Image (cartoon, rainbow, N blue to C red):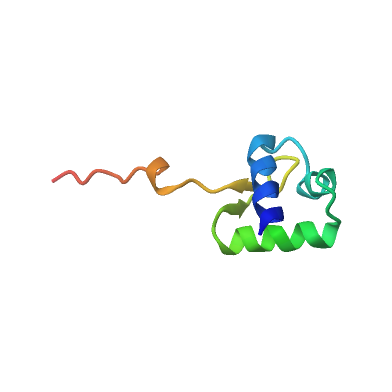
Length: 73
C-alpha cells in the first residue's frame, strides 16, 4: 500500500512533534484513512502506542536496537 509507506516515512521523520491525525491530513488523508493506516502499522508491529508526546505513537525498535541482557554465572 503506497499510502501506508508514505505515511510511515513522514511519521518517522516527524519524531512525535505533530499529532498522528494531523500528519495524515498533511498527506491528504481524512481521519478514518489515517486511523486505518495506524491500525495496520500497529498490527505489523512497526509502531507502538505511547502517551507522552503530542503524537500517541512511536516507531518500534527493531531487533538490532534491543540488547539482550548478559547472563553472569
